[in-house]
Length: 272
Length: 174
Image 1 (cartoon, rainbow over the protein chains, first blue to last red):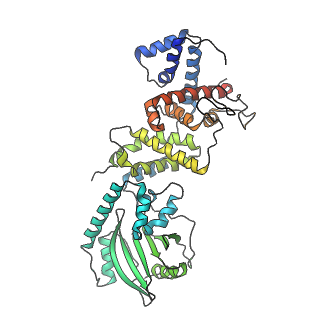
Image 2: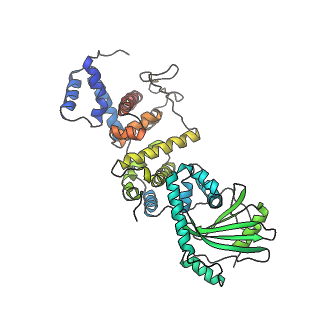
Image 3: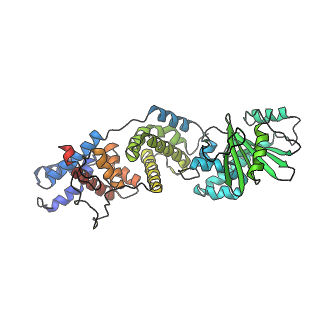
């Protein structure tokens, strides 16, 4: 490509063209570059051409303001503490993170090794900080906890008032599925309750109930159980069913096969 | 109670329009752009502890968004850059000064190019440098921070990108 011969000073001037066009050259230096370009057959057209392209991009690559709906969503996001789902999702890669987050919701609670495996993306010191805070919160909550609740109403009252869980239904066991234990839990800063059941064969299932706002459950991987369609996941040799009722998220985890887990699910879901 | 994400929660909203404007150019689809922006804010909150208050929050968030975009694009195998521009050019691929004639771009013979198409024909690092500098008015130091390279590299990218755009937009400008 032939063109006007460049003089030694042209190289220095052309190297400064980007600075000039982004407005980062001032005073005498800017004037010197402009002055050189005015009289130089090589640098003049080059500067004019680059300036023209810059102006074209500025004029035609219009800046689009963010839609009001996006602004509202972001403002809500910034205003509230991250949801449990969001924080779990945050540990995972972007594609499919909602599904993975949902699938691992309970597994993270029950399989510490899996938790730390996934959480390697976060800073260990942060994880320890969060785990310590969670344990402290759980211990604090346990101070008001009773080993034996006089009745279901008292237990639901505690869950509502102390944990802020508007739980209205609770399966308290039957001859086939015994309620072994109920205890408060704190997962990623969210107060919840864990309920342990045991069937006649001795196999256990754990139900976790916690605030579900912000947790999106994907439409795929649903298991049809009568008229219900909870999310089905497998993690760390466990089957999990995850669903939402109102503002609460439920996660049922067990080593049981799907059919057996579905029976437990129905008892819980249909509880008075 | 204060936390490491306080500066993000209080100040990040000011950069929403910049983030969205860039996102629209990076992904072209408005819904995808909104998801990219929202994910950027989520990431910013999650990694708030790595942000130093008082430094350039906009550049930090733009960097997050660009990284998210590049990762997603890589995962989707959507790198459709028609111009491979290795340093110094390469045999078999058009380098600076070896651009295809206007109107006959690779795989798109005879069609007219507009600015949008021309920008999207640039290699990603060139396209982003131009958009950051010319669309958002970022300084070259900011662009360097966002792109994770030296300021000298940004200068070179801007210089070459504008040259390429000029060639591609000959008809458009006339």
